[in-house]
Image (tube, rainbow, N blue to C red; front, side, top):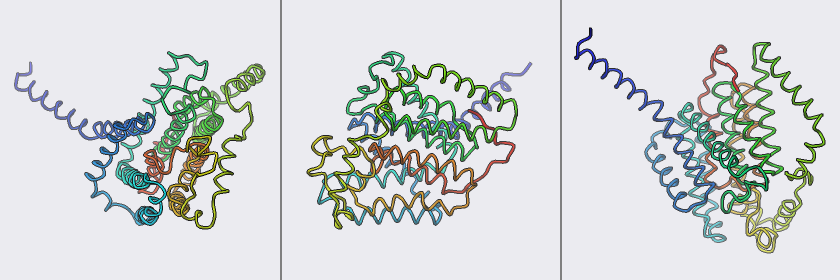
Length: 396
C-alpha cells in the first residue's frame, strides 16, 4: 500500500503535468480563440466599447510580441513595408477628404501586425479559426432553432447588419479555416462548410449562397482526391447519387423554394450594386484614380447611406489605387513561393471566394476583419513544414 508521501508525490507530479500542458498548448489555443471571438463579435455587433476593447487587446498583443517581427522573412518584410509606406503616403490626402482616414490607417496596420504575430504559431491559429467559427455557427443555429426559418430570420438579427453581412462574415471565417486546415493537415472541413452553406441559404443572399456552395464543392473535391480507401469513396458516391436523385424528384419544390426564399430566383445580376459601381466609376478622373473618389452625387450617398456594398470601391474611396495595389501584392507575392501545387490551388480557390464575396459586401479593406486576409497570407508565407504522407488523413 503506497504511503501518504508517495500519494502526495504522485498528485504533485500529475498536477504539474496538467499545469504544464494547459499553460502551453491549451492556454495558447484558448487565448487565440478568445482573441478571434472578440474580433468577430466586435465586427459583427459594431458596439463602440467592444470595438475599442478589441483594438486595445490587439495593440497589447502586438506590442507584447514586437520581437517576433525579427523572425519575418524577406517576402513578409517587403509586403509589410510596402503597405506601411503606401498607407503613410496616402494618409494626408485621405485625411483631407475624410476625418476617419487616420482611424482606418491604424486599423489596417494593426490588423496586419496582429495577423503576423498570431500566424507564428500555426497550430494555435488553426485551432482559434476552428473554434471561433464553431462558436459563430452554434450561436446562429441556436438562434434559428428559436426563431424558425421563415420570414428571413437573419435579416434583423443584428442591428445595422443585414443577412448579407452575417453570411459574408461566415464566408471569410470558413474560407480562412478551410485553407489553414488544408495547409497544415491536408484535411477538408466538410462539416463546418456544410453548416455554413445551410446558414447562407437561410440568409437568402445570392453571393453568399454561391460562395458557400463553392467552398463545399472544393472541400469535397479535396476530400475525394486525398481519400485512400475504396470504401470511403463508395460511400461518397452513393451519398452524392442519392442527393442527385432526390434533387430530380423534388426539382419543382426546390425551384419554388429558391425563387421564394433566395435572391437567386431574381437572377444573378444585382442591378442596385451594378448601379453603385457605375456611379462610382463615373466619378473617377486621372487624379481621383490615384487618391480615391468621393461619393457625392452617386447612388451610394443618395440611396445607400454611404454604403458602397463593395470592399474594393470602399478601399479605393478611402486610400486610392496605390492601396489596392499594395493589397494585391500580398497574394501575388505567393505565386513564386515554393509551395505544393495542391496547397496553392486550394488556398488560391479559397482566397478567390473571399474576394468574390468582397465584391458585393464591404467586409474588408480596411476593417478590423482584415486580420483574416493578412493571416491568410502570413500562414502561407512562413516556413512551410509538409506533413509526412502517413499523417495526411482526410476527415470531414
